[in-house]
Length: 121
Image: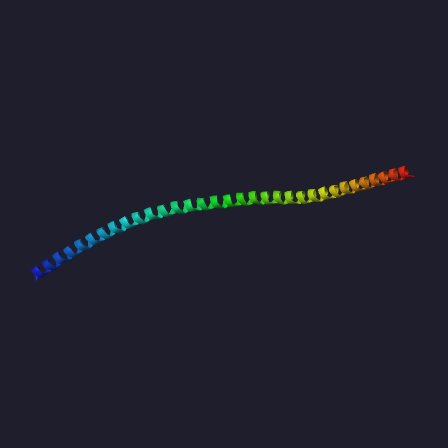
């Protein structure tokens, strides 16, 4: 009985030592996994910050380009309207000049006819 008890005590001590070794290994594995996960977390945080910065840059560039193109479009629309107005003005002046020349020509023609009629009489 004493031998059996000593054997059981020895077995319990051995089991206890095995459990302590397992606990130590599990703690060590847990610590290593935690370090790995924390390193990955830091990597993803840095990646997130970089992506967020890139996104802000893209949005900023988009807004700047949008304002720039809006200004260019507005300027070109003004230029188009000014060109239309200039064309209408130039056509009006051309017609006035043409009418003036035709009146002048008709007046010269009448003067010439009057002079010929006066010479014939």
